[in-house]
Length: 429
Ligand code: 4AD
Ligand code: MG
Image 1 (cartoon, rainbow, N blue to C red):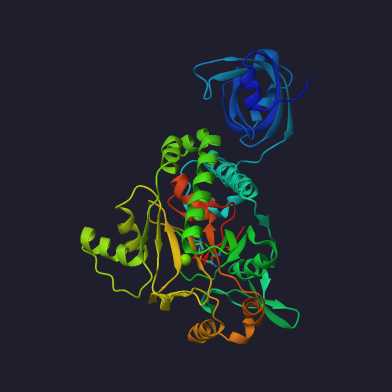
Image 2: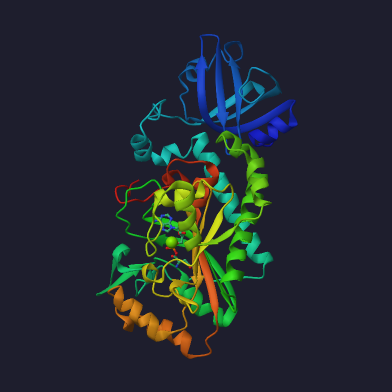
């Protein structure tokens, strides 16, 4: 007889089944043992009766949580069982015994992070990891359909890109190099060959902030397109996020329910128009609706992003942030030189999920910005070359994968949006 998954066994609904997995829960008396078995697909209740296992009852009695097993028996509907089915077991094998499992009820978040390698087996983490996986697969589908090329770039980079204050230095033989803060500068190089490119890669920021929305290592989905300007790139960013969320909400309805999120509401949200407003309009909304005065010239802080987004029930694109606080490659708007041709997308809970812009084509302006930020323009010669040999207008953006997962899964902390989080205070296991 062949193994099936637990889900397949339940879909079959009757007759003989052969399943394998790990003990999720166990309880028993001296006559009967209940084992709730889990595999990657679901959980199911199994019963082992002493009458059928006189010889090995001693072994069965000792089976602990997280032991791995194979089990054969007859499946039937049972309203009382956790997932509506029960298997009456007639043979079994313990494949790997389990020591007393350290994770019991009501553990502190820090304890669970110390035992992350075990905690990822929990139903909550499994649901999140499945949603994350589905999101990644949807994203690949989206870009393929849209005619983009996937372009892989180095993680070790000779320059700082997004500003030196959050860069991780790496000893590189006898030199120093940095962990990628962004894929962008290499993505920009590739558009002159491939025109529409994207990728997803690990991204590193030595963020000193210990917030619930910052990781030191996160995954960014980046896109760069030749010829496009701000209006096209912002609409495309909306299209990407809408597509991915709709796919994932359809595919992972059960996982969202387990996380107490409503997949139907997510799908409905993808069918609405997502507004685009200017930073200056955002300041006005903050003032008029919340009595909050923010001076032109500052990036929006968490409290301001959250307050602004209380006015909306879909994501919103905010464009034209003040040029002087933006990364060196974001160009001035020729009509309003104090504003940059850039955008962020904020989601309804107030998280910045996307950041992007048109790219400056002006070497002199970029050199000045770099000097303003304390960097050496000479390190960016390869990037300036892109403006010397057949330059074209172009734009791009980066999506913070964990931010999107945090939002759609309703997570308090971004750490749960990734298998093994890295923050200022957490780099193990
Ligand atoms: O706004 P950022 O810094 O933009 C860039 O790096 C551009 N070079 C992207 C591009 O145009 N190709 O980062 C993009 C997104 C943010 O909107 C946010 O969602 C996420 O990446 N992000 C972080 N997520 C988790 N932890 C952090 N420390 C993050 N920093 C940025
Ligand atoms: Mg940003």
